[in-house]
Length: 405
Ligand SMILES: Cc1ncc(COP(=O)(O)O)c(C=O)c1O
Image (cartoon, rainbow, N blue to C red; front, side, top):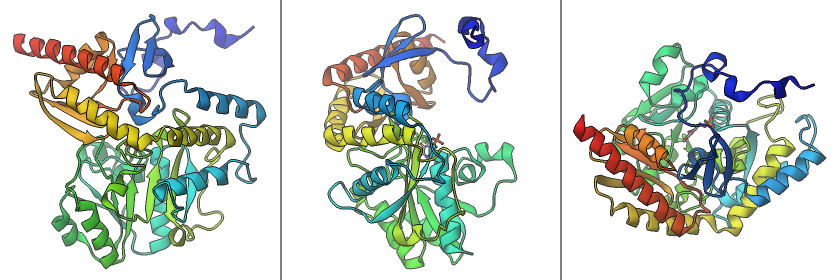
């Protein structure tokens, strides 16, 4: 007898048993293969979102599936009170990619379970390393997570409002505005915390040179530079990490999303000098860095390296952009590699998202007038062409409805 088997998911009202932190779902997916998803009615969808930059190697990637399957039958979990075979190896590989893929960067890694936890670790590290210089300056429009500290770092006041009081020690500046940052730099600022491209804010790419200027300012005022690569990292924007395009050397880098290709894992990398502020007992996590999650991360990193992920993202990004330019109603295309936002000629992006779904394409309405595309880096040029056709149709249908209304 199995109680869980006796519960038929079709008869369960999600609304009754799940907290209402998300809008009611339009579709329930039950299976994924490569660039495709399948819903509970057997309908097929091209996935142009990858679970928001997570399943970068596509769904059910064989190497990742094999690694997880082997590991789960060998050893899923030991407490961090003990060592495991995979943590050091995975950290070394991450450090190599932070160094650009050819040389070790010479930092150290803490493994967490999500992006917010990776950022929480970064914020704690600033407090431990910088002592009373604990203020973290982040950007308006940014997104860094949903824990209380990362929520305060997130530069979206409407998200702060219901959760006051938030932890002290956060202040915000306009993104891509070096002069405003200069005005707020003082002896209390311990770190500047930025996304190299603001993903959740609609894929906002700062001017070339902005991050370099921020880095110079951090060095001048002896503050740390934290780069949140949770959405941009691991090849998606055409470099292993987006900060590498600007030739800067951040003190702390946070990574999550694509790291496990769907297995929950994040990490905080820091230069050794900074990382050394943490002593046993300062930080920890029951699940962080457990063998099962690490097996996925290690296989994902191996596969991304074999795929030459940054090069691929760059090439496919060019193909995607050129096809998108042919669509009527597209006002602008933003982004780098396979992190792209398509700005349309009105506030009907949610309608486009719905029409796209009805026509077998998964995208995200990241702003009222912008659609975000983050297909897997394993996608083929033919699949890109097909996805753009479906998006074109969705924009036309959504636009017609807007005009009629
Ligand atoms: C740049 C950035 N930082 C942090 C996060 C938070 O990650 P998580 O949802 O895994 O906590 C996200 C999630 O979208 C993100 O895009």
